[in-house]
Image 1 (spheres, rainbow, N blue to C red):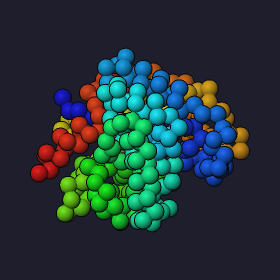
Image 2: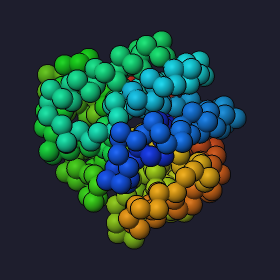
Image 3: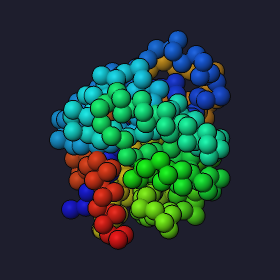
Length: 280
């Protein structure tokens, strides 16, 4: 069986890209925090399923919930970086990105007691606008990135990027492991997050199986807030953003259990190690 990468982007309900224009970062600490309780629910779900995963965590979250970081590591999961506060990479320059990486990594490692070797860009924001990003990651000693969505989307996407694990730099062992893509009625979508909530679970499961038949791992992701139907509602958010964020939250946990049971899942670092050996 092919080992697939099960991953969680650890951020709270108010930190998502859909709300970045209506919720000010300066107000985050005054809002109801639900990330710790929701992540604990995810840990319990994985424990019941016997699954290990990678938790790509914001440094902002790690700073406020160090005990949660230790519970993730103690559960046998990988802790990795999702940047400091969900700022998209293409809004930064190289040195600002380097500083963001350093601040997040130091905080996550201090909180968890574990070394951070993996990175996922907020909103898959490494793309054609950031030709310097992989070089910065390599210079900072990261083993891998899982930051590219090889599709066209109104919020993210690098349609011309490779769709399988690859070395984006000729002189570095850094691996980029892009998120897996599914096809729905002629349209390509990522196999995680809102698309997974909105679409029949069989579509994502089929995309995982298709990748595995070609001896390739699939990469699946979701967020802790996606299993929280009782989270606060942002009335001033655009209709499109609200539809994306709140649709079918109550169905998510059950769909996750079914998907996890149907395939072989593990930590992203384990998947990367296997793919790196094939690229030697």
